[in-house]
Amino acid sequence: MHAKVGLIAYADRFGADLAGLHGLLNGPLRGLFGGVHVLPFYRPYDGADAGFDPQDHTEVDERLGSWGDISALGGEYQVMADMIVNHVSSGSAPFQDWLARGDARTEIDASLARRVVRALCRLIRFRNEHPAFDGNLTCSGEGPGIVMSWARDDDEAVLRADLADGTAEVTWTENGTRRHAPLAELP
Image (cartoon, rainbow, N blue to C red; front, side, top):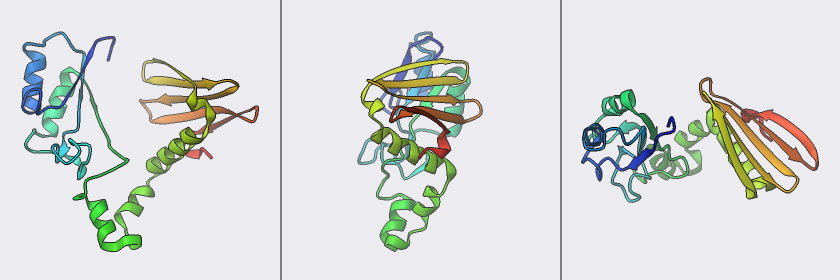
């Protein structure tokens, strides 16, 4: 966030809604924050898990505002939002599909078939299995690039990502041998 402090807030608890949060940032809090991490604002923002159980990531809960409000915030501040991929609302389409069809579900299978989801699943599996992730983490970056390195004893894993073009690659040691692969081709 350009070396400025970032605010982390639920819009409803810190401004009543997205426009109110924006008003606080431009009013009493003007100049204090370079960005804002708006905690889940998807429908429903007040679910059983405080918004971390969305029904749909493509919809802003209308009680908080709209994508226009998020865009307005983004016009003045760096905005971060959560994408909750490890669980969903029991009212979500994927969960309802699973209830109705069980193993014959279509919504979940279609989501899992997406290239980006397959790549993230590989990265999560890799992270859970490679010993370097139990070690020390260092991060660096310049412009749209970021480098995250994990090291433990002789084990190392390095993720290089270009946030501008969406590419990412991983370099790691395995049994003393250095290996390299684009994120989408992790073993």
